[in-house]
Image (cartoon, rainbow, N blue to C red; front, side, top):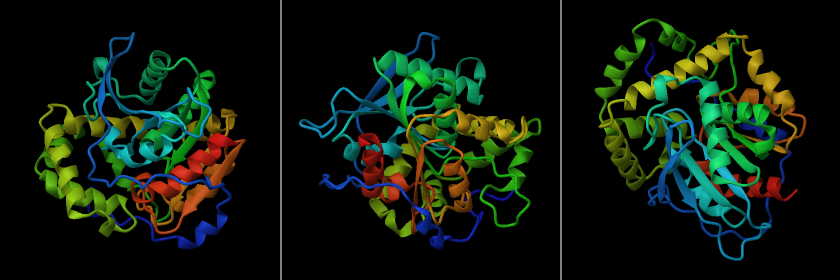
Length: 336
């Protein structure tokens, strides 16, 4: 299997930016925090099911522009954590309180009870979390794998979701083309015993090399990740690597996503999108190496009430690369 650190993915699609139709919040925002900034503080939340999830809280700024009392739930992607939302959650705090969750088995959260990494279980846990932390529907923002999970959450629990923002969501891509996003050989992970083999290989890569590799893979322009950013990311990865489930959890989540793609087969995501009636924002980077930007227009069109923002030059994590533009599009959605 090709290493995720070296997989080239599709070429840049800067021309797709002209398809954007999302609005932008026109009012002043504070300067975004650097990627190396300390993350927002957090604490564990014990769900009624017994699952423990770690959640970071970004308090709403005093005198914010929103109506007050609103909450935004941020859901990270594969290999990520709640720290991926530090900058954009700080900007969006002019409108609402932010809750960035570490999914089960990720960041500082416990692994899922019974070792169940299925999408359905992730959605059930997030619904529990919303009910435990908010008295009203929340804005949901998800990136990559978190975007896929967010779509399922909005479709299955519409009473809990006020708006939906999907940033480079991990939509199914089973096209028979050579320059697609996800490496089709990832299906080999479904073979028995693959988790232990791949986890052992990942454990051999130093935290510094993994941080640099993820920046090269996820950022449209890897040079935006400064030495201080990479050092902060490596320190976090080093801490997480001491957890016995750190590598296997990411692999099991990926396997759960692959099973979703292949059981239905890919209609499962698109059928869920058709059910989402709340205002929706789809954000994509034209230089996304993991999920092909050519899927952005189709994805936005799958939702009954969606806007689209395709960011020229951004990669797979626009919320980290271009937090100001990402926050402005989110704030415009929330204010409509």
